[in-house]
Length: 300
Image (cartoon, rainbow, N blue to C red; front, side, top):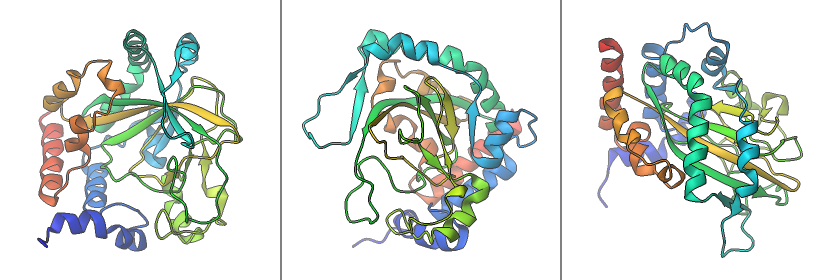
């Protein structure tokens, strides 16, 4: 079998990273994020939302999409599924409504996106949109069964140039399975309290005051850095509907590639369009990408 150093880093360093860095990420990604936060982001911002995002890895966006969601919510339909026991089902819209909805979302969130671009010292683009419903499943106190919708604590294995906005398609209480996140400043305490080893190996009885639940009203918007934060999908007593927007920070000369994605296509799987900026699969590519960002900041 041919040995590849980048495979070792990506697959086998996570256990090491949890033990020594309290993060479930490849070591090279941890280093990228450290230097990106140190040398590239605008951490001296006075904006409350961006300051919260920098410190804790998440922020509630002070913009409501309630009117837009109410306009379209009766047009969502559940995607036909073959597996009747599936607990996560995608929601769909017709193509005309997809175009209108993404236009309204962009217009409404554009002031916040501009603030993010100042923070990242890079362009920010919507690269992917998913809408789905999580159904109830019996809470488990072990890890014997497969996950249905990422209901165990984990970090997404991407660089911090990747982040998510969740938009509530309904009022969400603690009974509705809100997303649970561990603020960045609680990360070390969380790993210790829950004796966290991996997403399928930790205690359920840790200090739950370390965890924030994303409850809120229909149309509320919640940004979080899923690569930097431990998080999981909560289990609803009935069901929960949500829109997930993937945001990518990238140097301006590359943003045109994402600008070419048709608004309808944003609702498809666009992984190939953005993974090179968020999930490079070799140490060399990670290092090269960092210096592209740094050079972009220096040259303006």
